[in-house]
Length: 514
Image 1 (cartoon, rainbow, N blue to C red):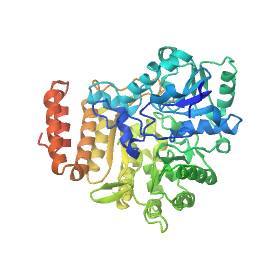
Image 2: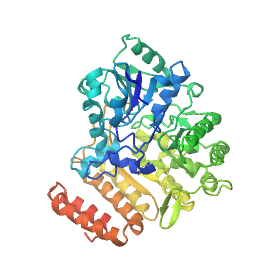
Image 3: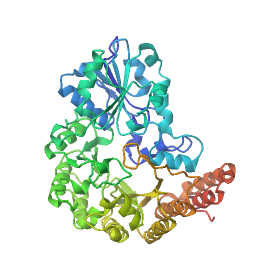
Image 4: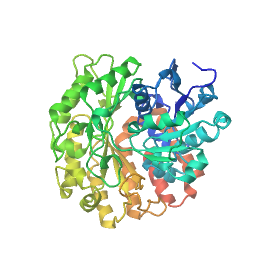
């Protein structure tokens, strides 16, 4: 695989992003935890073939496909886990192309749970820094380092770029400008250190040519609901043509993937033409049926759905459940088991129980309904999902700018109303993402949040414990978790600020009496 003098373009990403987490995308969240708690291991899990790493992050595969479609030779490119960079970098290497999702651990999960759990910074930041600062081959051959991806905004400043040795950062959808950028760099021409790219139309998006970690396939870009705290929601939604989607599914299947992950801000809004965000049921079902009909797929995992869309088309979830689980050809089943039964899952955002906060920052989230109806919409949607064996992962935002105690109490009331539902609640601190409308607002601080916001966090995790205790508190696992919880509290958390909160949540998760 190695060219004697190195490949012209070498693609890589940090160890946490070049890892399949035992083919479980939800375990990947632990890359945002401090090292002590992480279920991630530092050893590469991605196999190699003649093109380097057999699987890679989706965005990286998009850039590679765009280059190949525009005259760049695949023989001059290689994809590698950072541990093996030295095998492929040499005097002929012009560009190190890096895909970054959360390089400085400044996103929601990383900041929230590193602050709460303590014991060091998140793995995402550690591994990204290690990739750039501890590679002797980068210092020896001095290739140009170009970085892009959803987390590129974290590096887009002179201080970070100088410290990490990053030469160029591309913000936005890189496909539009990547040919010009790479062509100039290979010819040793000058380009700006930070480059902003515009959004593409769906016809200009090139399909991947090589398989992706978790079998990712993009079905839409953007959202259009205009939530001010989020990046994708501010972008116009573009739906990828079904023919191109199926081509990417085939690429992943041919590469050995048996899981297909549907990359989208909302599966239920695929090819939605309604300005009020009412789902196009026919298009969504056609999409899912076409994918499910492919042989050798064992399960399909959508990334995101919206609760408002569930309520706007209450018959759609039952139809999708039937497609995913009871397809006559492949017998696709849910990936996960809870309470002894198989379930489907997807991420969704509840964010708040306060209609006032919803109307102020995320009015589009509840369409076609009104902010006043939001708490009831959440409850109705979760009822529909649970009735069809869907158990979503739902986020709540803590300490949003301008949030009052009354707003937070409404969120607590909503969480209490959800006690009888099966779902996983993910409370996260508000973070002013660098490419969102609220980028200039102050960041929430775990040590400075209100008692009411802290109560939201605690109740979310108490509800999670109640939902899952039947599944994880059995036999040796139960005894081990109690031992670990007691050890953690006695050796570490009893000395932290707000130690009562730590004791409360540790005891709840471990099934102990507080």
